[in-house]
Amino acid sequence: MSDRRRVAAFAGVVVAVYLFAVLAIQILASDELIEPDEFPESCLEESMDCAMIGPDSHRSGGLTELRFESSLDTVMAETGAWIDSEPRTNVLGEWPEHSHSVFRSLLWRFPDDFVVKGFCDQGDAVLHVYSESRLGISDLGVNKDRVLRFSTHMSSVEMATSECIEG
Image (cartoon, rainbow, N blue to C red; front, side, top):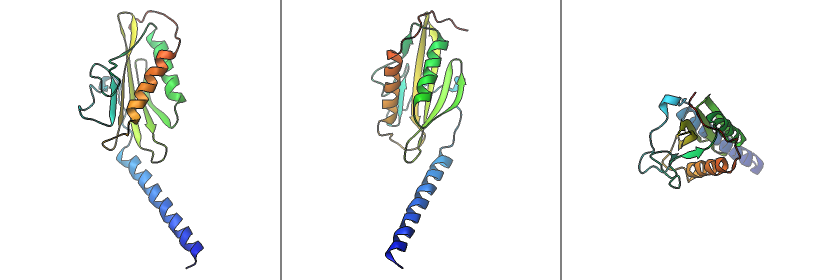
């Protein structure tokens, strides 16, 4: 067998193994919609693949909520705009007070769930955020970074001031 054929055969095996691995990841971590009444309560205490801004915050820089002097519709619309601007992201479900999206890693296409819950409290729109890898025991900091990037973005956006009233 010539060197060219060996290289081509090796490259073919590498591509086949990669495609098989990506397919296996997609099968093992298939999409399951997280509906509004299923918003996760917390991350596991020692989890290194989950981040949450909420009452039981985890890997979120101590943030327990994101609060805005705006309507819930405006805040959730901006949430959707940020999600849409992120690469390799698919929205699985959207409701007026909740969204569930999946972010996928570049090379191996590992899926991470990104769930945002919004509600009104004392005239403010409040968000809780949850991001978790579906496979593995560590996310190499990706979910923590995503939650903090989202928080930074939302804090920097100018939104119309209004009172948040439950619909």
